[in-house]
Structure formats: structure tokens, C-alpha cells
Image (tube, rainbow, N blue to C red; front, side, top):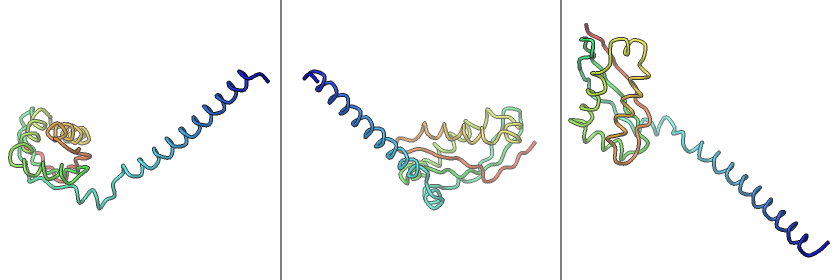
Length: 141
């Protein structure tokens, strides 16, 4: 074999080996991130808090009394929301709920929770709200 062919073959083999090692490394790192991304129930409880009961009107004239459990990805985010609970958190909850209707609270609770989660994540400077769970709800005509 001539010298250019040997160089080309060596380059192709080297690139193939580097590619295989890179793929294996990415797959390994992705699988370890998936395991680390799912917090345990203890971590969820540790990084969550329950709001006080809030009563607000809905767009169709009915009222709802409701309480949430807010779950964050880190303690700092939870503490930030709790500090602002007197005004920022209540404001976000009320703004999110007043545009909803009674049917949203009868068959679309997941949408209510997701809407509030998105609104709260806009407030946070650091960290994320990973879940919002309705723990108590009463509709009043």
C-alpha cells in the first residue's frame, strides 16, 4: 500500500474509534442524568410547601376555595416563593385562577396545575417549580 492510503486508513480508523467512544460516553452520561433528574419522595417533601387556603372568583361568577402544594427543584426556590407568599405567590395564584371557569376545576385540574406552575416559574430567579398539586378544592356557586 502506498503512503497516502495508509494515512487515510489510519485516519478513518482513528475517527471511527473516537466516534464510538463519544457515543458510549454520551449514552452513559445521559442515563446517569435521568436517574439524577428524578427526585425521591423525600426530596420532593423537603423542597415543597403548602399554601394557605385562597378564595377567589372565577370568570363565570362562581368561587373556588383552594390550597396547593408547590414542589421545587431546590430549597432556595422554595424559600424564595415562601418569602413572597404574602404578595407574589397569592398574586400569581389569583391571576391564574380568575380567568378559569367552573369546568376547569371539574375536569381540567391538570391544566390548572400546569398554568400555575408556568406562572410561578416566571417569578423565580433561581430554581424551578417542578410540580403544583391541588391538595384541597371547594367550588362555591
